[in-house]
Image (tube, rainbow, N blue to C red; front, side, top):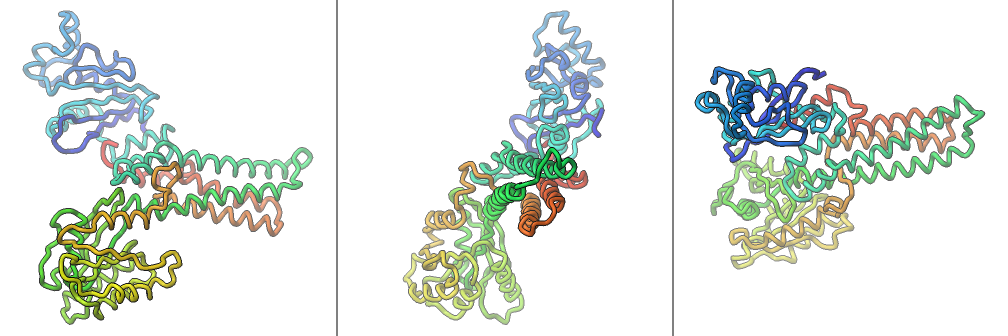
Length: 497
């Protein structure tokens, strides 16, 4: 679909920097770069995986062609960094390093040239303009990676991992993404699909040629195979919750009554004065969202309005939003005002936390403590009684104003949310919603095969659901992916990648 279509894009960020990289890929990449690059060698004369120093020139401004510059330079036996005088005065845009990667041994599997120039935005756009003028076009978002996928260099799961690596915010997120980019998920899926295909092919062969292929005892063997595959799929599905939190961050709502110190807790976690802090109750009227990294854990922090009974219409809107955030949060940081006794507003908040993961922060340790820890613990026990994994409420004493308690809180969050799968121990972690849905469909199909075996249905029933599982797993690697879905996935990529 891309025959004869050569693309180009700035692969580095659109901001001033020391070096900028412009990527060109397609059948005419070398030919087009030859027209604007002057060095000791032409781009077309360079070996694959080699680099050359030279200049990007504008042939129109110089009034001659790069061919002449190469010819003159060769005849005079000048150094590669010395283009002819016409280019020196008028046509030179920048001094660059050019890297050549010839098909099929490149990222896109096409001829690819990368131009390393100085990183000024205006300069990079000027070089890009020359490439477009000579016959290339601007790449669509994700088009380089899409070509790598269409060329068979990577599968869809590896392609999606490219953006996950770029967007990784923590060591755990990076580790999980690199594992997927390395092909760990691809290998697991390929192994499952191979086993499904073997079982399906055997059933079909036995039904077509019973004289040479026997189904005697096959039900038991297939049952064992389906059990093994189901465990494998369920194992990957169970990693999704942790994978999502590692990738997207733990949605953390900071709640409490007015003037408990919620905004001070936010500022402490961010290590900057992001939220306005005053002694006036009700200062925070709306939610404020920020990201913070604590000991390798990414938190999506939501600072909420103080929760209390109020007749103020504006404040009540903030209270309603705070209660909505409680329902949607992965973690609740309940900030209790240590300088005031527990009251009905605190108890109302605690009752709304049933079924949630909660860490209670007794704030204002720097002031005389007036709250009863025993009373607070008793109230919290009432909402945690159904959680057998928790013997007692998680309570920390902090002084957000003084920055005390941050490290203890980070350690507790890490203990609560990271069970091991996402800590780089080689296990596959699923963090993509699309992968989760495909795995769920595959697991359901395998479950139907198991039911058919137990009910001793005819063997041709097995193949229907086996192939349904095969197709669902193929969605992950892109082997059964519709073109419109592929277009949608790559449209979410950044330019130049």
